[in-house]
Length: 108
Length: 447
Image 1 (cartoon, chains in turn cyan, blue):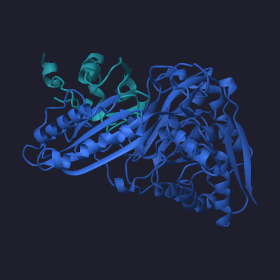
Image 2 (cartoon, helix red, strand yellow; image 1 turned 30 degrees about the horizontal axis):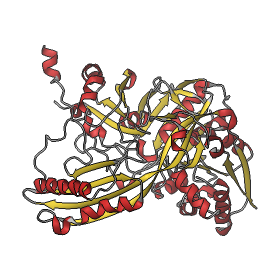
Image 3 (cartoon, helix red, strand yellow; image 1 turned 30 degrees about the vertical axis):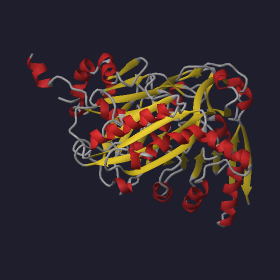
Image 4 (spheres, chains in turn blue, purple; image 1 turned 45 degrees about the vertical axis):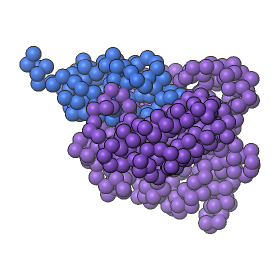
């Protein structure tokens, strides 16, 4: 199952740092998100484009995670050579992440 | 209980104008804020001002004010905007001239200046933030430096009876928080109220990004009538709680999910959203859908402000040259790869001094990045894109030329070649002691 099936996301930029929120459609899926969408997995997902650390902030009251990805934007929107200099599309890319099937997880 | 209604008329310099007119006409507003200043805009505006002292403000200022003033004057909607960019004084004079031309009377227009801190930054060795390096690394190339001002000069202007407040660089949420603090008389050390006011400002500052813009994803997040999307407005009460909504009948949606996405937009640590006037805490916010397109916002909090203000430095970074050409049909991707390989080799053979080179295939990997790239079927067409950074315009031009030469010397069926080269004015950020920054307010009166 892809992350896209249970969460939506939005990317924003500040300097050379991208932040991507990952928000559960259903509040009940937040714990599953928090367990599986980890700093390590996000770092691996973007390993070919990021040069810095990844931080994760947890917002259980919103059912959301906020990832802060350093050295992610080719120097920042004002100097990046990327067609998507803001990294706006990184949110869609993150939603492609493969996750275990929640039903199978429950049966485990 | 007293309620203040404030709308968002723009979230970036090129934003649509009609939704702002709709808000001024039908939003029953007290205030309408326009956020129009991106990171590097001030540097570009500063360059324009050096060539002509009468400009340097937002290029759409005249069009926006001509469109919005009739409804704003009729309905007594006070306007706050950072469209002053690098020249708030000239912007205020221009707004006054527009108002006179349109026959309006008894208007007071404030210009907020003092964000220009170029003299303090030039020669300093402060560390940069949000990237590596120091200010001294940019020596000789700096064209502008502007501190993010807070709410206080805007409140001063409102307290003096201004109908319109035009600023340069101020924090984006401050454009919307200032009138709330002014109306309700919240103290400048009432950190929780200030924090909540920044939550409201942050939700409003990107206009339609909270009413269903930058959001739709067919089959997952369906949004109706995006071509007629309504811009947001907040009904704010004395205790700081707010109802976020939009004009009835406009397109888009105001929902928990649109508000959650915007609440975290461009935020790092949600518990420490650093603003000039307060360190706001977004993690304590409660959202509740109380009706169609109505979301209640409460619980934002805050703690004492920092000793520094963020400064955006505009500087001449480099030159960038680019070329593109398309391939279609069977084998398009393979021909695109041949084309990229040719250009890469040609740039080496002809010894173009390139500091950073990017070889993209639009339709495959130019926008989309991350682990999932490569797991898609063969595209029906691709467009290759070669882009490189140089230290001179002449070298930047050579990059596009090498792509253009694929017309005759590249793989079969290359079409639609384009090329460009540009000077890059980039933005960097640092932190400056707040005590050295001195905001000032002056007034234009239309009698």
